[in-house]
Image (cartoon, rainbow, N blue to C red; front, side, top):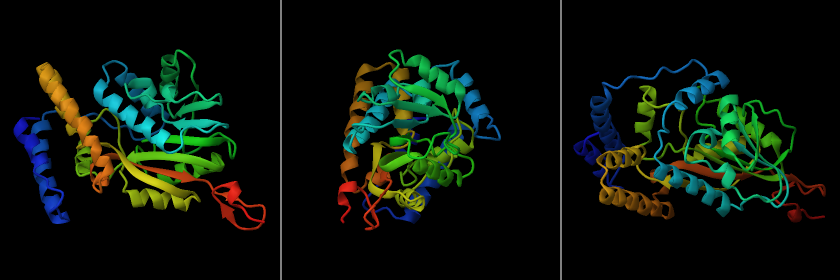
Length: 325
């Protein structure tokens, strides 16, 4: 993408934008992007989103360098680790589950092996056996256990886990109703009082439409499903019986523009320019503390708790100590 095309993104002003203005800007950007990428070879999308498809993705991506720059991968990793820590960290006792091992198998944004080892069991799962095996190979210190399982049909008993971390797993389904199926499964295997931390592609991000467009054109290395607003995610969590305690948005940058900017500076091999771009992206994370965080965050995040049934007949409580006789 040429610098003149990138400029379109920086003309957007938060204070005077309305939906009509946003749609007009989106149409102009799509026109520019289409002209730029019209000669790019499309990637075929298999008809399913099950193990066979993700095994195919793993084999294809295993033959080339990862699409995500190490600097951007580290930013994403730190954003998720900070989120887990801010929302209570790992439990003192019990089991921890992380859904989706794509990062651990393929990229610089792996976080499972960086979760503090508190002495309990940490389990990572992925629908693809090939991805789970690759993630296990990269875990030289055997920090966790690894299994192949579908989040829509979990093979675990009820109330198995104290904490479940689901990082952008549930936004890769071809059928949007699979989000609800997956959340029901996660709620089922969560113990009473246990927590679910979930992140999904943020539909409210100003440039999320661009990611959807490029995905539909087949220019991404894997399929992306729909994205979600924070209120949509909260509604889905409450539907399956979980209580939402916190929400936020993380990893603040213009969607895909960070990838384009870093790739551009890397190709120029200009250390000064690369440093400036890196500093700008780090500074942009301050948007997470503003009221515009849901417009700039790449992922929407929520912390939900499975209520505890009170044995004293007072209904439900989020903490056993809240029960009254």
